[in-house]
Structure formats: C-alpha cells, structure tokens
Length: 457
Image (tube, rainbow, N blue to C red):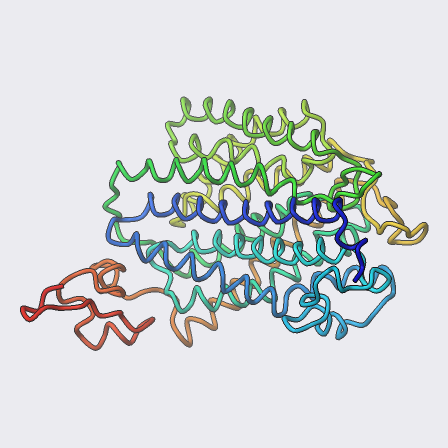
C-alpha cells in the first residue's frame, strides 16, 4: 500500500476532475437538446440516438488508441519510454490504467488517481468533439458513416490534433501556442471538417420545424453553458502548495478562470443583443453567450477580465458574418461552421494579441531547452500556425473520409428515408415501418415493435 497516493489532497483533486468529466457529459446532453429542437419532428429520436452512440464510440476509440497518442508529448519532453510503452501502460489492460492508486508505487507513477481520471476527461472531451461533428450533418448523414467518422476522429485524428496543440509539451505549445480549452482542435477543426462534409452531403429537405420545440434548443444551450462553466476548470492543473496552472503550465487561478467564464458569457450576450436587433438572426442571438465563451476559451486562464469582455463582445458579430458567408457559398449549416470560423479563429488570434509575451509551455522540473518550464511565450505567429494546422487537419480529414465513405457504405441517407422521417424508417415509428426488406439494408436492423393479433403495436 502507498498511502501518499490516496492522501486527502490527492483524493480531492481526483474528485474535482471526476466532476469535470460529468460536466462534459452535460455539455453533450445540451448539444443533443439543441439539435433535437432544430430538426423535424420525424427525425428527433434518430438524431438523439445517433449522437449518443457516436459520442461513446469516440470515447471508446480514444481509450483504446488515442490516449497513448496524446501522452507521447510528455515522453518526448522527458525522454522516458517509447511510443510502444505508452500503449502498453495506458491500454485498457495496461498497468497505469488498471492498477488502483493505493497499489501504485509513486516512484513509478505519481498521482495515479488524478492521471486516471484525466484519461476519462480527455476521452469524453473527444466524444463531445465528435458530437459537434454530428451536428454538421443533421437529418441527412447516414448512421454508418457517422459512426465510422466517430471512430476515426476519436481514436486517431482527434488525438493527433490535441497532441499537436493541447498540453504543456505539445509541439506547438512548447514553442508559444496557447489554447486553454482546445478551441482549435475542437471548433476550428470542426468548422473546416464541416465545410467539406456539408458540401459533400448537400442540402437537407425542407424542415417542418415545430416552433415550440425551439424551447428545447434554448434549454440545451443553458445546459451547455452550465457544463462548460464546470469542465473549463478541468483544463487546468492543480499543484498543492503551488496553485492552479493552465494546461500549458501558464500561471492562473481558479478564481480568475471562473470570473473570465462569466464575463465571456455576459459580454457575448450583450454583443449578441446588438446583432439580434440589427440582423434579426435568432440563431446568432441565442448562441451569443456561447460565441463569447468560445472566443475567450483559448486564453481563459491568462487573459484579464476586461480583455475577455472586449473579445467576447465582438464574437457574435464575427460569427454572424461567418454564417452569412456559409449561406452565400450555398452550404446548408447554420451553427458549427460559423461558430468555429467566426468565434474560434478570432479567439485564438485575439489571445495571441492580448496575451503576447505571457510565459507558457514546458514541463515542470525541466529547466532548459524546448521543454523548459514556462520557457515559451505566447505570440500571434504561433497562434496563427495553430489555426492553419487545425483548419488543414479538418479539411483533409473530411475530404479523405467523405470520399471513402461515399464509395463504401454511403454518406447521405436515401430520399425515401428523408421523406418518411428517420425515426419511422429506422426505428419502426409507424404501423408498417420496418416491415419491408429495404428498411434493414441501409444502416441497421430495425427493432420490430411488438404487435397484437390485429397487427398494431
């Protein structure tokens, strides 16, 4: 037994991160409600089911493959262990992920509980990113295609993205890039992935929206805001007797981040109010607190409150312009692409301007070289490089995946499925749904409803 591994302090820190894991699940629930409120009534059940299953396919893929990819940055920085060792240590059967902290020698693996919970945190964060990708193809992306995208992005592309940009020893962070909440590998990647995916999918059929259901979307946004306010704190590192540092080992504080979160929501909402009156764009107006949050998320740990207020205020306006651009080039998508381009890119670059020169990056205990503790400085050039890298990753990944999927399982649901509604077509929502063979050939086997002797459910 190693009691120092399960001290009160260690258990409290691990418990804090466990709460943050639950907060990301709340964010996913919020995303689901937003989308359920925006799709046609006949597609609501399938929309929720696809997002739920795809999210946890990504979680599983990250746990099996992706965590080793992300952790490789720290092995590189410290010169300990090979890439293969990471798969052995952090696999589902590996010693680091299966041995209780109380039985783990701290000389071999210190703070085991915290690192194990952080695996879960990263995994569900990857699942949330895949849930965002699903929102790009609502009502027309085939389930099979989405689940394959979830596995590839969750297990390979997404981990490579956060290896490059998120973590104190990531190749870009160690040289001056800063992205506290991973906006670039989440929203900027999704935006450019979406430009290709939505183009290849084509427009959806005219939606018979139920205006009363838009209340679900607003409630979903509130759930997302609640979850974001909690999980954002989990993107930092708590070191007893030292304090709270950002994920890039930038000096920060729980109080500073909490204030900045609220100011981002508040001044984003104020900016959105102006956009709403000028453009009558209900989507941007409703999204405005989230626009503010996304724009400030890259620097939430190192920006001052007044800087957060300025950045957040203009985010809804830039998002509205980005959405207008998306509409003019003929793409049928009204949330994610505009949010990633308008608020995401703007926020990453604004952090480089307002926080220029702030120490960041490196590994605790390393005193010299590329990975020296806080040995890099935030600057606009590296912020721009991070944007370009994630934009290229999203576009290239989408182009490859959509091309392969179109030639194999297919990318877009059939016109018949769209006309009937995905709930009825796949899940037996009507008396005759699922009774003909074609219902069992496109994506999944339909669960037959129980019937009485008259043939009705």
